Image 1 (cartoon, rainbow, N blue to C red):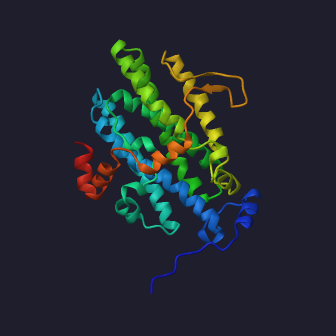
Image 2: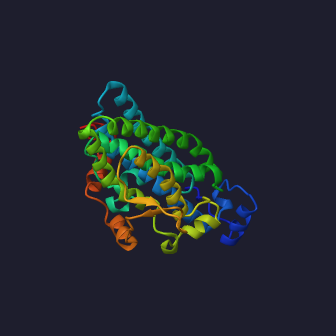
Image 3: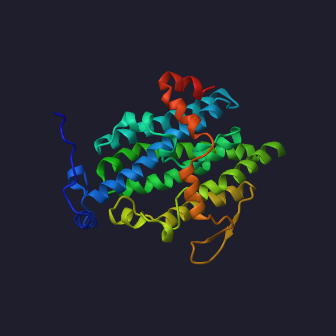
Length: 303
């Protein structure tokens, strides 16, 4: 007979009390059902986002303007694939089937950040994606790698966090080059920012008052910051960088209680959540590439 998978042995309140007292959770048996559910939900979003970013980034990475830059961009894609593998492997320890998660779900079942259901159009968009989205990932994962109560995830993210910071530096360097190039490259960069900025605002999920999971995430010690706190940390990092490059962004400094920035784009979170559920225009294509197997993935992703 197949061995029974481990099951949580504690109540939610017992786990919340334990992590509040500084306990690190190391196994499923030390969890509660609610803790396990919240942990898997967060980890699956990260795993799927890393995986789909490979499919989104790779075609444009192959158009890099120089050989050394193509090597750097390809290394970023390879990093993202490695990050996904780490996350799916950790999910196996929580009772999930890695092969099923990667290859056997329907397109609408993937939980990646919505932008990665789309295509990048040019090198400027890859630079902006690295600078904005990899920085958003670093805000999230940096918090988890410092504060997460689940020890295996916290330790695994030390490596991931360092590599994500390399990705965002790559984006910063190329945004600066394009901004200082000529009118054509700067306009291309501005167009990329215009397209991606709303997705960055949406990246961290609904405002706290509309989120159904954020309080449990905090109480279980899976991270220390709320959705809004992470979003404003990201604003503090990216808005000055964009403005220093002479790029227009739908935001300006504000001394109100929202954290120091006024953001012109105010998402309709009900619409955003529905859009996430419906998925984007290329998710079925990307899933088909995955289902074609490793050789098919290599051939189609680089076409």
